[in-house]
Image (tube, rainbow, N blue to C red; front, side):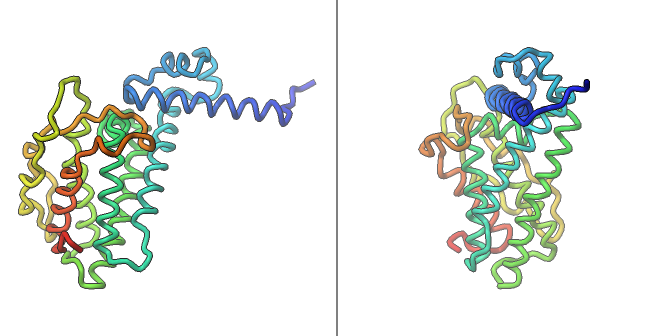
Length: 254
């Protein structure tokens, strides 16, 4: 007689799978994708290595799902913060920058893993999907700002890519994992020259990453939702916002 799953066995299997996903996300949040070996995930989830392969089609697919879950949550939070409720486009862009950057700085290790860490092709494929989704949010904001006369940009798509690229470049030094003690006073985002961004023909390679001090701030928090916001240096986020507003021809006080 063929084995037939019951509602209880299906629920148990689903719960076990979810447990392993949570374990994998915990490992990634503390050590990045490189640390998330099948053995490490199994140990975190108090399961055998074989059971991991019973629920997932290999490590790469498991980590791609972890990425999709973590990045999807962050995208939803940012999308909600930048939603159009009739407020000026510049205000929406400012909200996007504050939420995206603030959450990244509060969850430094996970943010580095999601944004910059070298990953497998399966995970990189997910990363590209979410990178495009963020750009589409900014592009719509820029289009709305152009319609209202708030921004100056001939190509909204290009401008959106430039804005997201600038935000990421400004954060990379702050997020890079480092065991060395750092001094938040070292940063000066104003050193980023807005002249390197030309919305008529942006080349992100023209932005000099050397002006971003890699020893900006040490974010030891791993949970993007439960870390004391006082650990975030507000001048970092304020500087990113000023830079993006200048590039779009908008007032920082908008």
